[in-house]
Image (cartoon, rainbow, N blue to C red; front, side):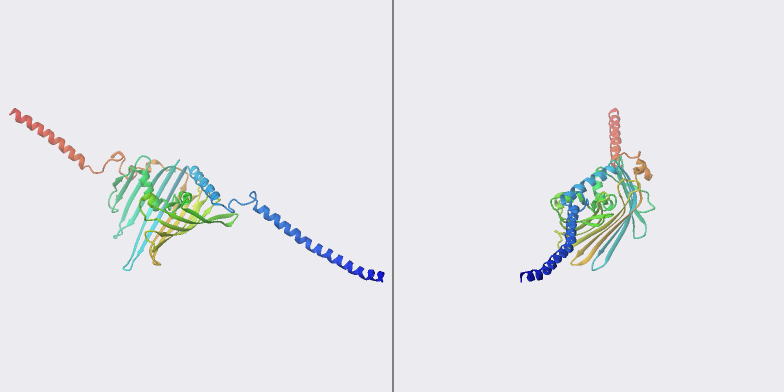
Length: 371
């Protein structure tokens, strides 16, 4: 009986062993596959193998962005940008719709952070005559020329004593949508904004692929303009995103954000823009085409829209001659009036008449004594 039982059980044991062997052989590739995936995951996550823009922390982004701004300014020691900017303004109301447009010729030269700027603004009046205003920030003098008609010669409207204040005044819209566009949101300089304690990184993510990477920063920003200007005009909450090119000095490529202002909470302002760059011999990208739109809504209805477009005609690293930034370039002659001299000569005539009157008085007194 024992031998028969053993004989009967032997095939069963053999079959069980075979099944386990087969299961082991089948499952072993899965174990190897899981191990390979785990190893690959560890390699990809290791800092030595990660892309520079993967999982950017706010601290790392700020560090890389700050270095890029510094290198951009240092490398572009000699820059020349010439181009045309168009500005269209539309304002809607129940009564009528108002439209205004003007063009501005920009001539910009920077040599070792020493800037020279010409902004020639042109606007057609109701008679289709061309009005022009030219602002010049030169090497030695700064002035504004104007003429109300193409038939009139230019006249000196103002000599500018504080070039930094005028540069700040020209920043929006003329420079913010042209030479400052790589690191500016229209009128807001990006670096001071993200360094501010009122700026919050909501999300930082990589877009595109390895050959054309972009980094999108979604943000909340509580801007308080009262600190700087004493006005609440643009104080409010800004929410939106910015898209940067990490392979080209972290220049700004695209942006879209919404402003809710404290002074007018019932209104909202949507700001968007796209920047395209060229180089033309420069080590770093220069703004070739800049487009920006500022749209104001009130109670859900669009009431105002401003559109800005800049197209560069020339990007170069050749300096512009200083002579182009002088009064002589406009046929007025630099020798005729020293910098800061008043254009009104009435005080000089009054002083001259006073001297002549005093001399006549002295002569008359002497003649009276002799008589």
